[in-house]
Length: 469
Ligand SMILES: C[S@@+](CC[C@H](N)C(=O)[O-])C[C@H]1O[C@@H](n2cnc3c(N)ncnc32)[C@H](O)[C@@H]1O
Ligand SMILES: Nc1c(NC[C@H](O)[C@H](O)[C@H](O)CO)[nH]c(=O)[nH]c1=O
Ligand SMILES: N[C@@H](Cc1ccc(O)cc1)C(=O)O
Ligand code: SF4
Image (cartoon, rainbow, N blue to C red; front, top):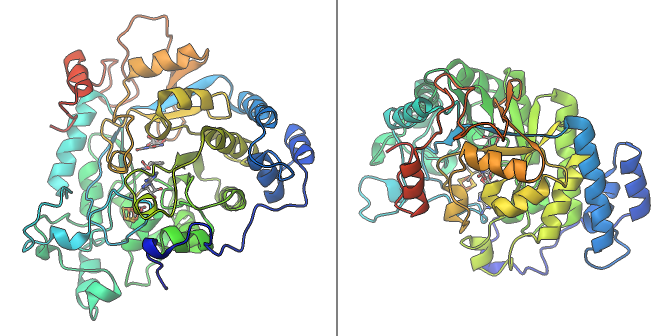
């Protein structure tokens, strides 16, 4: 695959074949949504653009789309706003994939034992991962989300290491270097899953890109890889790495990643292995509204085929410290109008996905609360630790307490509800009840807040006490 370098990309001429042009009209598309007809890609483009017959976003039309989506949300899932008590535990930032929207990763060779420079990244051993999760579960957390860089020393298990070690020119052909070359050995994926799967916690891990890494250089199926991971403790898989599921966009922003079909195959393999999955979109960079609509179509197809997608998560691109922005390929991320419309059209288009998640990490509290009346019904999790958005320049912090959630959700007149990762277990919280509030659905969750008042103020002051220290 030829890889364009960010510096050589002309933002006005990315050579896309897909453009937001349709034979549909805005009013027709809106009527289709109102009458509950399954929307076409052209309908979605009309709604996302508030009509291709007008320039820019028409504020009055936008409100009509948002209102319809809000009504659909109320019909489908009611007034509850759900959230989960979870911890993000990223295992390593070492990655050579080079996605141009990402500043989470650090070039992997800098992690090698003979490299002197301080790369500012990290790799956790399985024992360190286990300790981070154990400490969080002790506090009441019951989900751990773990997404990581594609460390060249990672393999699925010992058998996979043997295959990769025997591969010719493995660094180049299969992005593999033996783990002993690195200062810290991340262990195998199986060892990491086993380590993080402690005390009945739900383990949400292994994105399609990570699953690809866990079978590189072999003919193993995604299903068998996910089965092996499930046997080691994996419970569900995050559908990140989706970015925009249109190859002409992937060729620009993540040419080193698996393609659209590869992402679909991995997700289907995860569901075939008995796992729930989530699906995401990472939008607001070089893509246009036609790409966004085509992406939604892929997610709807996946759900038609599998029924395994528990939630859809729009991730608004954080641009500040990314190659795409630094090289002038983009001038910023999505506007507020675009964020609201993306949430609304996701709700209307994805008639087979029950939950649409809004992210306080990407939007901040104020905008995230607004999106709860544009079609969103889930408010993600407490996460306790955040690296991806922070490293890209995001400023909205790493933690929300149950008190924060209860106050925010009540302030918009909705019902705060604690949920399990799979949404099958829920507990409504009475905002007029006596606080402070804490989780109750976890193995060690007895209603005590996740962090003490002192720990929270230390965090607020930026002195950084984290759940795992
Ligand atoms: C950082 S990766 C980690 C997991 C794994 N390396 C992968 O790519 O699947 C997880 C996701 O974070 C999201 N992400 C990365 N950088 C971002 C940014 N600057 N703004 C918004 N989302 C971002 C992308 O959607 C990406 O797929
Ligand atoms: N939207 C973001 C998430 N979402 C994931 C949730 O927190 C949770 O793990 C999932 O809903 C399964 O229960 N996580 C982030 O780190 N950052 C986000 O922006
Ligand atoms: N890790 C992703 C968020 C995410 C994680 C798990 C999910 O199921 C969905 C979204 C990010 O911060 O960009
Ligand atoms: S998005 Fe994932 S694969 Fe791409 S560079 Fe970042 S960590 Fe690596």
